[in-house]
Amino acid sequence: MPRTLPGVRPVFSRRQVLAGGAALAVLGMTAPACSSPPAPPAVDELEAQLERARHDSELATAAAAAAAQPISAALTEVASERARHAEVLTTEIARLAVNPTSTSSQTASPTPTTSAAAAPPPTLSDVINSLRESAASASHLATTSSGYRAGLLGSIAAACTASYSVALVFGGSAS
Image 1 (cartoon, helix red, strand yellow):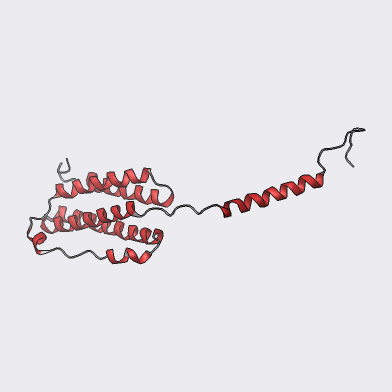
Image 2 (tube, rainbow, N blue to C red):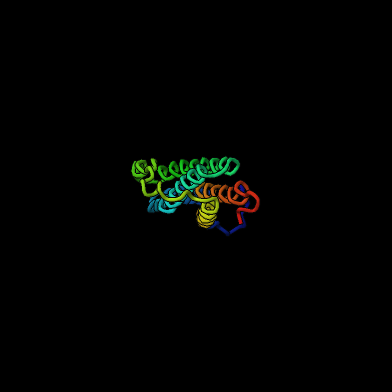
């Protein structure tokens, strides 16, 4: 039995405090359910990254066809890596999109036209410059994103940076 001072009556009983706490807990759990859902993340930024990945892959593939062996092998690896980036970005866009089938038609790259085939093949410098732009774009977007998307974009930025600053450096040709 708790001790009370004579003539002093508590403002709230123990039962009232427990009932009030339970009511606040129920209110705390139901209040978020009544609010509007968060806006779905925009996929436009990821679609731009997807296009950059496809472009880099195609550019590196075309440059590899015209390059000498050590450079050709490195460009082929860069093209493969950027194609994998495109696959992962396509998967993430499909996960985020309201209508996942809207991006499935974009997964297949169109074949180059005859006018594009007649143009001279891209050079190693063209690929390096494109990778620099892709790295900067993905890096900027990673800093404005959060969670998995930020990690994905940071990884893509790091891979592009490593490609142009390490994998494609042949006797100072990256500068």
